[in-house]
Length: 167
Image 1 (tube, rainbow, N blue to C red):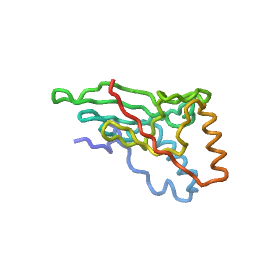
Image 2: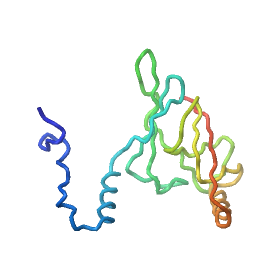
Image 3: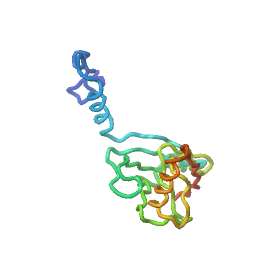
Image 4: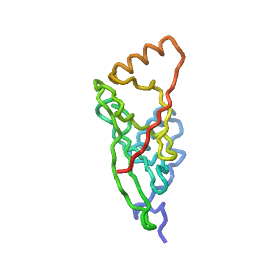
């Protein structure tokens, strides 16, 4: 019976022999392992967002190219709902909101989701390092204000609460 460690069948390769790492500096090895470990998608969290709906948050290996989240790992979301005793997808591959830095923040503007968020009773709750956005200001202004504040004051965080609406 084939097992996961049988390379001819495409399973996992044998563990790295300790001789492969003896005498090598630790930092470059960790950097290489980090690159390899982050080369695939990874489920970050699964949360209930309603009585019968799940939010699956996963990261892609690619980085976001534009907006507020530029340079961060691309987070995507799937929504699954239980209907007639079966789990079915009702939304797949939803992209995280990465607003343009020059965009004005409006009351209806969503806040970019965090992989650290928690969902409870239809609410998405996360603790963020940026201050709560001020309506009418741009993200660029909000970040500049936060940096100016943090230059002379202790770090602060904001509690962001948003309500989920299912598609």
